[in-house]
Image (cartoon, rainbow, N blue to C red; front, side, top):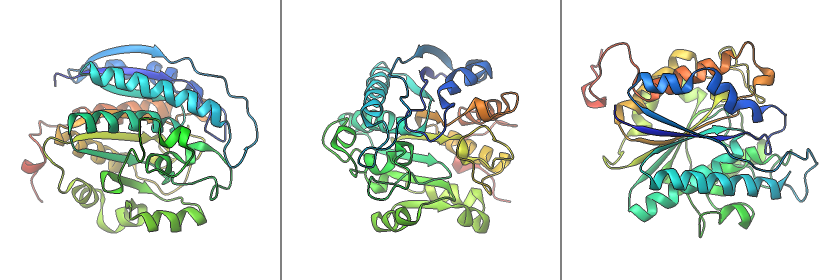
Length: 312
């Protein structure tokens, strides 16, 4: 694989309900993310860390915690991701909490619109992140990025990359969902989002779910993978602030990443919500690195793409 990847650190927990995700970028570096990507033939450029405002750790104001600081961080992420896309590199955002997805996905969506390129976003997460100020029980903005990307939220965030919405419902695939707030559940249903929750994975298996999620993917589409580490079952990834039992196993998550890699169309990535303060010997970061390595081509045997995968 001849891919140039730019690592962009965003060390903040500004949108989260627990401190510690600000240490995520360095934990991923310590776990050998750059070496893992180079093993797959990628060129890796580490651009260092963005320098946003500190976390004031305040209560919600009108349904949002730390909104001004969230806007500042996402503006920086938006600009950094845009710059790497324009340079022809694959931007890989190292979070930080998942509120940063507004900046990264927003930048990718605008880039794709300008290039007249189809977009598909794979949101790998235990949560749908579709809360609003009216629905949220906490005001934590890391539970709102998908809603903001779809046009539901404060204008400072919904219009980050131009007129909203940045993302249409048919451009989004959610995998691994198993925790949705009561009011959020109905709102998600009303928007017609393509959600593959854990019951669907249990009943159909990860391969069938990924086949369905990838069905109809245009050959020229840009795939953005937004990987919240709490996507995994906490038995494999305890180092997150919002663990939810009953998630994908290590092998199911590997298959998900391998099938995305088979497309050859992954053009941008987020790795978010890693919280080393809650981890054991950086084990969660190491698991995340293993999964990202699979996303960029690591496999037991040589594979030639989805269409040639044998049916057994």
